[in-house]
Structure formats: C-alpha cells, structure tokens
Image 1 (cartoon, rainbow, N blue to C red):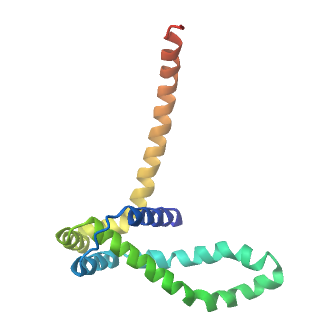
Image 2: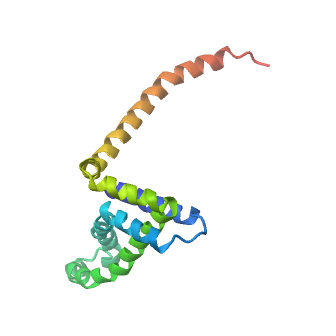
Length: 161
C-alpha cells in the first residue's frame, strides 16, 4: 500500500508542477475537495505517518537502546506536527483535481463515486492495481522471452558491411 501511496504522492507533485498557471475557481476547488474526501485521500495520507515515523526511527535513535525506549513517547508528541503536512497534501491534491477537471467533470466524478459501482471501485482499487501490475510484469517478461531470440536471429541475419 505504501508503494502506491508514494507513487500517488509523486504523481501529485508532478501534476502540480505541470499544472497550468490558471487558478481554479472557488467552485472548482470546493467540488474537488468533495471528490478528494470521497476518494478517501485524507485517510490515505494519514496512513503514511506510521511509515514516516518508522523510517525516522533509526536516524532519530541512532540505534541506541536507551533512545529507542523513549522513541514511542517522543512520537506521540510529534504526531500533531504532521497536521500541517497532511493539510498541505490534501490541499495539493484538491488543486490537482481542480486544475485537471472542469467543474462539471468534478461533479460527475463525485456522483459516480457515490454510486455502488464507484464505491466498489474505491474498495477494490488497490487490489486491482496490484493485479494489473502483476499482469504487466508477467506479460512483459513473457514478451521479452519471446522477442529476445527473434531479435537475436534478425540481427544475425543482417549482412555485415
């Protein structure tokens, strides 16, 4: 899950930097925020915190046992410091959606994700991404195995100058 969230984060950052300079309207931002909430992006961004803190543990404790004991207490005190970062990610995601979809499209997407099919897509999206990634990896590997001898044979047949 964290791999996909990381990818989403990078895509959001890329989309923000590639987004047109035109500022979305307040109505588009409002509709985009509703969509971001419906897509449960805030919950996904909240779920990043434990991984962030776990990755910081070796650096923060310098792998010294006496510091590791105090780490959990310290984590509880810095958790609130994540809130501005969480809010910034949510705002950035909102801007991405508002910049890439019209107000009507945002409303259509919101309506879709409130219908049973949209809810099912949200529930199964991670599984679908994993399964389709696996299909791509396996299919690519099979294609490479099939194409490699063909390419080698074609290159052998090419006359030397």
